[in-house]
Length: 390
Ligand SMILES: *Cc1c(COP(=O)(O)O)cnc(C)c1O
Image (cartoon, rainbow, N blue to C red; front, side, top):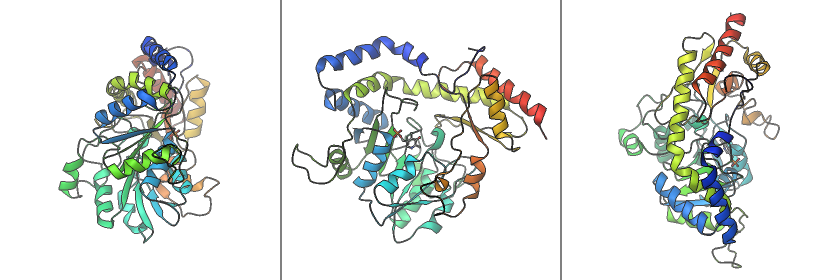
């Protein structure tokens, strides 16, 4: 694919590699007549719980619903505050607002693109109930420091893992420089994101690292009570049909999606490893380029996105130039959550988040992306910067 257009993401190559198995799984569901929840959802929940190393996994309709249901299952609602990052997809803050609570933003750390834990303590009030870190682009947030703060202030932790399925916390985050309590750090080192806090919320939106062929989501927890509540909330607040005990949601996982996810799950580690290889290859081709900051490649990072920073103020021109050469790129995210129309004017400035919103550029990435294509993208970027550099 080194001639012609390069998309930001190619889902067809992966489909073709599993076509026969996926078609067989879809046919099996159609013939079973069981379309919502049912045996494939149950089997997927067991398989994904075993993969993640967590006691309970509860399928639901989307990553957004997983966050909403996770917050409700933690007892968070009107009057409560949840501390999160301004630099994420809107579903992060939206889920907090939708349960009636208020998102409170803590600025991010420029190296990791994730919430800066040192910005959290100053924001804690009597109303603060939880911290919602996002493992943005597939890079685990600074979980040991976040857990330490949560323990100190008696807060819950709900992880937004929509971009981090299979990401592993390495024990260092580059932010706290190993200053957090060693017993906390060693207890979580090597754990998968989503299994460290009280609740993990995942999305199976088709473009995510583990993507279904429609919407889907997952709530995970080690806690029996939270799991019970989450199971009730996904089916209209009932344990037993027509015996509704609370106001819930219609948020079930479809059997066809679960059957497809069961075909894909055994491949996720290889796909994530292939994404890391793509990231290393980009870093190799872009090494030493002025005005470009490339992301660090750690073993636990699953590179949902490969995102660079263009620091000479010409990010938008770079994007246009690449588009003219048939290379698609994306800006995740051009407007931080606090500045979206729904929240505008309600929050102070977050200088790091604001700066990165003007610098980030996500380049094409998928597991099967070939070295020659990566080279072509890197060359195009180099040529533009050489011609327009300082
Ligand atoms: C995709 C995404 C979500 C929402 O997931 P859906 O399945 O689309 O509802 C939430 N948070 C982040 C960070 C995401 O990238």
